[in-house]
Image (cartoon, rainbow, N blue to C red; front, side):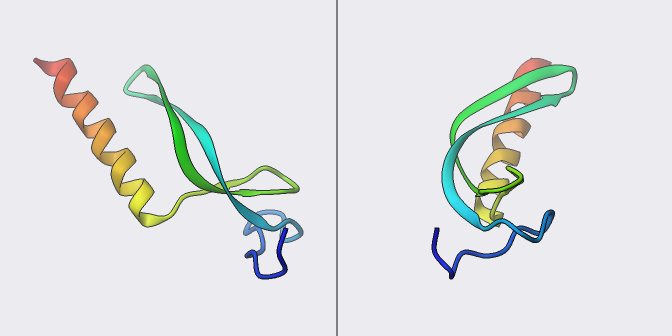
Length: 71
């Protein structure tokens, strides 16, 4: 952990560290699992924060999933 790591917005104690995680979410009644997603993770409470680019990519993947299930 570095002193330059940002503070956690939830617990205000831990520091956010860049890690690769498995993103999971229930989306339109389906359980979605996306491995190897970049996130900032709190070293105390485990809160996950995603940057704008990651959220854009996840939205694109979930949007693609929606299109595929309608065909």
